[in-house]
Each structure stands twice: as structure tokens, then as C-alpha cells.
Length: 116
Image (cartoon, rainbow, N blue to C red; front, top):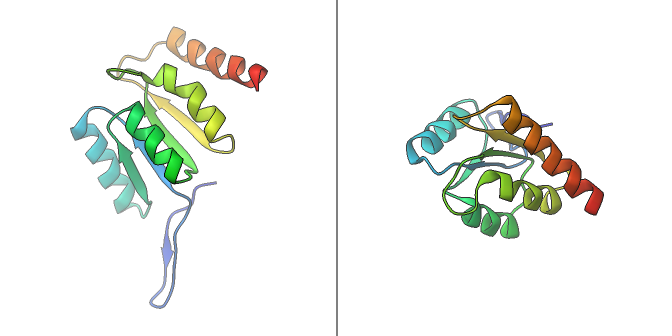
């Protein structure tokens, strides 16, 4: 479970890393600022390719990922995230969300789990 950073005057415990994958720079920066204000450590990626490069170097406890992005979108990124970060919480988000999109994302994860 992701917890907030807890600090005293002498020590500071930093929780697991959080990754925001969002192509909209204003939204990406806003999410990072809000999470930082609440004491969370958040890293950002402007797209799937950048996210995959970060995942190669770091481990993330939680990933917030936009579904609709140029290039590789979140739906294509989802099984890669699930494979590379099997113990992480993956949160998909979209301004264009529908029930059908949520079902498609769930099916994508189920299919990935069957192949692993």
C-alpha cells in the first residue's frame, strides 16, 4: 500500500515510487503537484515510451496511466506494465472513459495474466 512520506525533524521515510503517465503536460504537472503536496514521491512520463524507459531504471508501487495517448496508448501499455510491474497497482484514467473502455482494460489484463 502506498503511504505518504512521514518525516520528523531527524528522519524521513519515503514510500514506494509513483509514476504518472500522461501526455497532457498541464494535467501531468498538476497531478504531480497535488501528490507532492500530500507528501507522495511522483515521477512523470509524457508517454508510453518514456514510461517504459523509467520502469527499466526504477520500480514503482503505483502507476497512474492515461488510456488515450499519441503513439502507444495506455491500452497497449497496460499489458507491458502488468508484465514488468506485477506487484504494482495500475490505475488507468481517461477523460473519455466509458463502461466499455473499462471492460476492455479489464479484459486486456485478464488476457495478459493467462499468457504469463
